Image 1 (cartoon, rainbow, N blue to C red):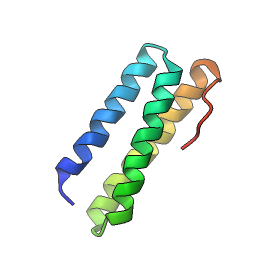
Image 2 (cartoon, one colour):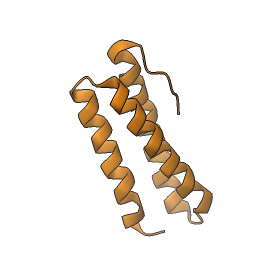
Image 3 (tube, rainbow, N blue to C red):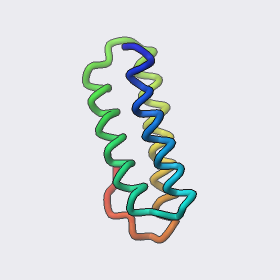
Image 4 (spheres, rainbow, N blue to C red):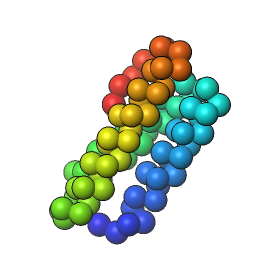
Length: 80
């Protein structure tokens, strides 16, 4: 798997962080769900250990971001 396949995920993560900074939990949560789906798709086709480790790192980061979103107003409705 090429690194550029993770560039869309990286961009999505940055958007989530930006939404959190703006205290926009709804948009952050929506974007988090989208990025989580992207990671799931990458996981389905991952063959190399390096790719699996990169996906795992992003999954941990998304879990941490989800906790931040929930902490914003306690109204995040979707989990990853």
